[in-house]
Length: 346
Image 1 (cartoon, rainbow, N blue to C red):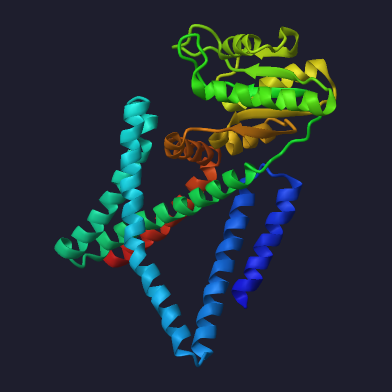
Image 2 (image 1 turned 60 degrees about the horizontal axis):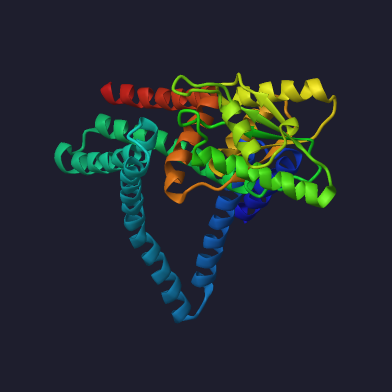
């Protein structure tokens, strides 16, 4: 019953925090812990029921299912490796050879290297305790960040189901880079999503929201992202009077801060939403909260092949947001590792 109580406890904490504020990484942590505890309870209950059952058929089915799941683990592991490497090749072909686009390939190669390291250490090096400690330390650190990555995916997934009400005063559209002075498809999808919300709100309530296009000028861009976005919206029939430009920001946090300053000068009290791509939605919500902006987000769709690279980059961004927490935890693990190595040397 311990796992059942743990599942209920973690899920209740998740519900309270989610209702309080959806823009928290802790929401995903508690939901992940609750779901994992629930899964352990179901497995424990299934095996307990099987052990007490007199049905040979039931025992054979449960045992067979367990063996099948164990046998599928290697296929799942190597499937992830192959999928990541192939996705990296796809990104090179369809996008460019920028480092960010090659992250899935590098991650797949890293997992493959760890597997080869473990096999080689067992077959060739043998039983060196210190080298095994090094190997398990690396695995432990990777396991920690894997758990955090799962919580990030869970948080990102549940935040997709965010449906702001049609009573907004402002729609913030976050920039994402230009091709010269043109709006690329990724940014166009954000603007189209914003216009879709704009027209739906006008149809349902008669209220017109103002757009806040947010993004400065990059080194390889001819004009600011805000200027290009404004031109795109005007070309689609949005009146210029309903478009505000924020053209100084160079990152998502500044997008939120500077857009808030723009809106604060117009109204003392207002309602706003922000628009970005679905993979960026959750991290952007964390920055909105950090900037003191009471705004939820809606996400535009992204090409499926682009998602692995984008999610890995988003994860790295969130890790950096909480870098001191992660440094403390990894530092503690390293301290334990160093103590164990010292004991082996004595």
